[in-house]
Image 1 (cartoon, rainbow, N blue to C red):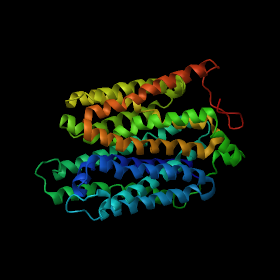
Image 2 (cartoon, rainbow, N blue to C red):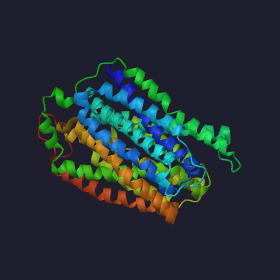
Image 3 (cartoon, helix red, strand yellow):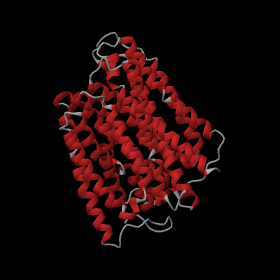
Image 4 (cartoon, helix red, strand yellow):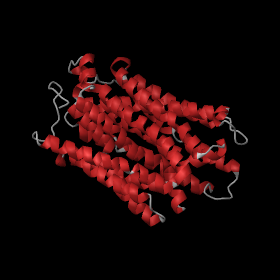
Length: 421
């Protein structure tokens, strides 16, 4: 087994996952135009990606110990390639179709988004328990470094999309329809590159047994750990942290463009850059000040940033608000997974899969809602409505911080000890 190579392959797999996210956000308006649908209908087309992510993360995570990590990663790479090709060759209607979901092109788009989500979920279901297993004494830090490549992939995909937009003049109001279509197709095709790379990297590699299996924890104990009251509370928080982080991200390019006239993908790339640096180099902050203390601060900043984004009308204002929001949302995902692994180690790959899957299920709900709010009330009200979620999170995380402080402070639980208290 080569832990360094496996960790690097995990990073490339996560880059693929997040490139889907940034490129899909960048081409959203082009897809609406070519498939003749509105924002809410596109939101429903995107929704199965997050349902698929949820299902495969949960079921894939529970099958990691039986099916094998290598096979699941290879299956995910094949899914990425298949889904991209399906969207590229999907038939597109010549005009608006009623009802919109009866159009074969829309159905192919919907199905391909589902396959993309299934592939993303398989990646999430494998790489989190893999990192926790290979680095049992440094879980939160390694998960922060690993998930630094989520914004890393957003940057790669976002900058590539931005460069193609400028090279091909896709932001021009007079761009030819054929050129616009070819532009989003080229952007989407880029997703296949890292998918092929990580498939090659893991093709013949040996993978370890998960930490739970190595420690002799039974499947029954794993399920019981996932049903403890504190785990369930953590699961509820994951709904809100993911909606705060990922829901706005998917709509940022379109919403910021409508508010300021600038290319909104630049805001997504900028906040991704902040997240990459902070996750990669600042992961140890979690233990220096307690994961729950850092989560409380993150929730406060996220709420302020999102509410501020709702009122921007210039590029300067957008970048200022995005800075607060970007710093705030940085540690949500890796800390939610890190605390799951540290406080509920008996939950094993299933516990991490439930958290990762739940996070994306939350986004499946928030995306069409944001699309609906966008159509009815505009971009500003959309951001401000979502900003209520981190307000609730602030209260919960602060209460948990003082709860653990009263009991001697937050501590990671050894896998042989009782957890979830």
